[in-house]
Length: 111
Length: 113
Image (cartoon, rainbow over all chains, first blue to last red; front, side):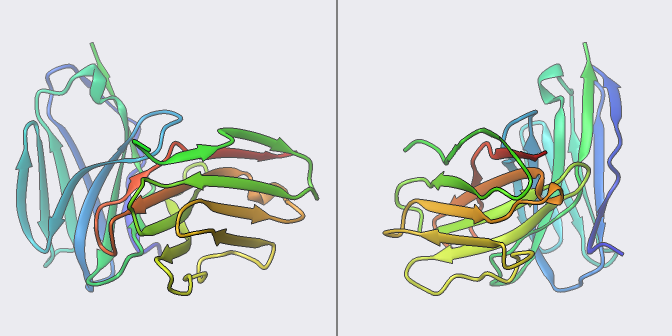
């Protein structure tokens, strides 16, 4: 079993829809949780960075962490065609520089 | 520079040849990382450099892989006697310190034929 599980999709939604992405993990020591966006042939770009459980909102993006369930989510409201990309979850233990990544979910937002 | 720069962006090599991949991190970033991204897989940690400390090489998959970082800046990842399973995108990232959010480069897409 992988340390971080993420459904690869693909996920296709119409413009304006809410995109819901999630990851599950097995290591209860993870404390920092991140979401990266990766466009084709580009490196991952940090979108959201959260510590421990709770919600964090940034514009159209909301990240949620439920440590009791070992489950994290990313919601994209009012999705745009420019949101079409692969979204990767990542996490790390406290004071650890290594990130453990999910396999990524490919999202297409149809105009 | 403004971002993390990697070269070459694409590399096709014959099985058994050696390759060198270069990473130029953001100026002032003390931490540098190499990850590998294979098709349908998540990013796999390879190696970590922090300042003048000994690098963490625990993610290197075999002794054919090595990396160095000169002068606390530019890093080179070397793969000797390449194999087809080495085909992947090799990503470099840098950060101000441990635990800070990474900035990734665009990667080197390596194809071993």
